[in-house]
Image (tube, rainbow, N blue to C red; front, side, top):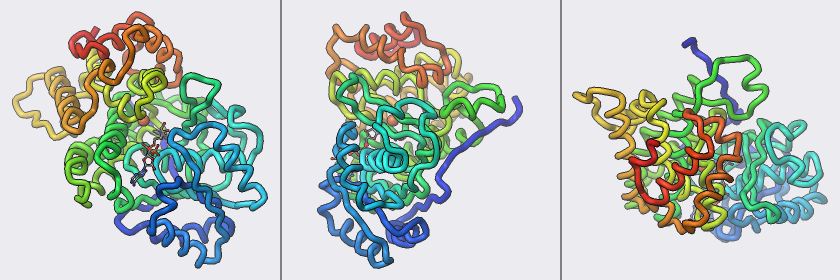
Length: 409
Ligand SMILES: NC(=O)c1ccc[n+]([C@@H]2O[C@H](COP(=O)([O-])OP(=O)(O)OC[C@H]3O[C@@H](n4cnc5c(N)ncnc54)[C@H](O)[C@@H]3O)[C@@H](O)[C@H]2O)c1
Ligand SMILES: [Fe+2]
């Protein structure tokens, strides 16, 4: 197959210990008036005060919105935008977990184009550039600092919704592993597991012919040569250090690996997209109120097992990136099985629930969850092995029961 790739990224990505001190310089190249979206936790820290003081010292007027809530409830965006409109910001700085970064993206969208958030749900609905966003993550997981999507919760809809547009990609991402040192183990685990799921789903996503219209008609286009490089880099780093960062949160080298892993995974799935594990998490998360990263990670080994029939070669490569020794292994199928086993082992070691039953999904919602998941077309179309209603019900049932073999279907 001839080489094909598409990649959409911020025009500047800064990564490393202490890089948060570059924020003021980056901001002063971006504009003069900054709306800063964060949450009450981070706004109360001396690190935040220091970052804002540096931005102000660079001559930039700052308005802080520190009311971001987890999962970005729809109407909280309108509140933020109303408060900021009179200030007339010319850039938005998001500092915090994925929720703060998504809040910054949504605020920059509404400040630039007006209207209501639900005008933009779906793909390619954003008509033109938004205010430039500078994204500074404090968790290592979502990759939102580099992706073209913002996820919000809408009280009128059961499932969370996404706004996907290349215009939502931040202008600059500043990733400083020191900002993740304060993450408690459970947050480190679910955020890092989300990142590993992004990387593996991006690497095993559908491969499509390199039609020139592909990236013009779809935000998420499936795997390609460049997204693959980022995905494998992410898998290597996360397998090397996620467990270490979970066990010893003060291990800055492990924190840096995990943050780079999350960033690289974001660079991969921001163009390649994710697939069935993410689709099933949407309804499961809606019913169980469990974190996004937990649900996708619970599903991942089952989805890999389902996909093994058509993607054994790719899953075997994932196995190598996970550090498995292929010497003496006879077939891709055998190495793929070992890779799935290693993902399950790692997730168990960091406290990821092994079944949907343990996540709290009621048994009588299995068919409903399967039906809802199948309705998320942008994720389902990206899964390498097609899913029909019976297959999806079987997959969700297998993940509920903890029956890995049954998920091969
Ligand atoms: N846009 C994307 O590309 C993308 C991708 C995946 C997930 N998401 C979304 O991101 C959100 C999840 O983001 P998240 O997992 O980063 O969590 P989060 O932003 O929802 O934050 C969860 C909690 O962790 C706290 N927290 C954040 N950083 C911390 C730190 N350094 N120390 C201590 N506590 C800290 C927050 O204050 C909050 O209470 C979900 O809404 C999910 O749907 C978006
Ligand atoms: Fe995710």
